[in-house]
Image (cartoon, rainbow, N blue to C red; front, side):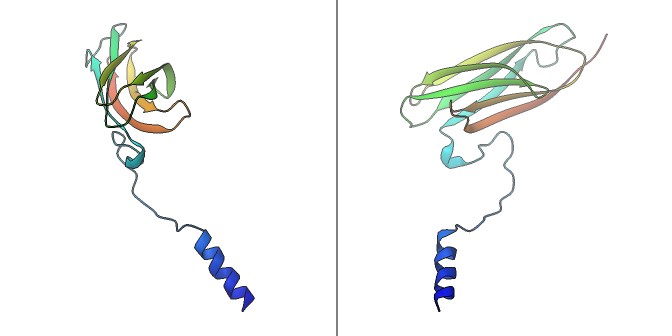
Length: 132
């Protein structure tokens, strides 16, 4: 009887495992953690080799109080820049990083997260820069 009771207690202490489909990259991993909306853009959208590309992150906050966020810019899996700032409730801010286009296929990624490393949301875009 003691062994059965221990098993029931253990089962009550261990939370069930829930499997879910992976969220699209432009959606938060966990909606309960996401106090932001993120829109990314590139200008120009189809750059030539050597051209300067502005990678823009438009971050909009919700009802959460002033909160510190980190916006990180990635190109081909390498972090190119990171900027931390405080965003007010119902505010919008635009953060820009410049990148010099190189020939080839590239993956541009913007992440918004906390200073502790919690990712709230991300945006990805694939581009091809045609060589000369």
